[in-house]
Length: 276
Image (cartoon, rainbow, N blue to C red):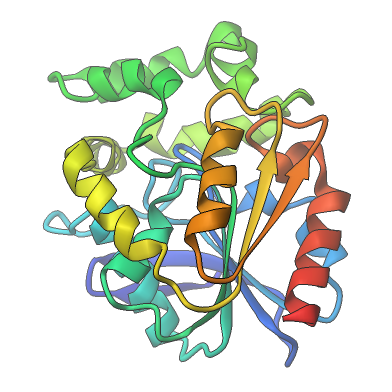
């Protein structure tokens, strides 16, 4: 897989290439680019770039001094867009919502559109079901222990953990790919701990949100009605806050809408990009 060296460290990515409209994808905690494996093949005619951000499933560790806070990773996205000299980008986020802070950081000039698909918003960083794992990573050896827990069926398929992210069963081989880097590499566990402990106070998050919703280009809120981690009420509120927002509610899905409803997600992305 190709990678690009940024000031914070190497970022691997897949790139379908071509001259079509550019979509850059974000993924969730302890996930990687394969989160979009069922959607990207349906986006014929688009240039789809799926990086693996340093959220714990990255295969190459970041530099020890890398800023992996929420704002730090948002700036890393901006650095990536700059390094590839991408223009008129549609940034698509699912599960992890911190990529939207590229707007509050004032680095959104390469974006033409923003897609928030069942992701963190307001002060929901991290969502309640993820908070025990975040707390575990705050204690010495906690990130190592968390990665041992990822081996268990209860963590992988129980609805209180990763089994609660998708109504369809997540394949074990995909989760092996997600969890293996941090199990084998202490530097990646270091990055994981830095990220999960990098969320600011609710006051700061809400201040950032007030800046994000000033984004003056088209926004698609693509939200699972049944999502228990990312409340549909968040999307409905944001639909009235952004100057130019379109709300699409997705049935029969939980947080990982690219997993539960890939065809619907692809169709909505195509319609959104081609009509705005």
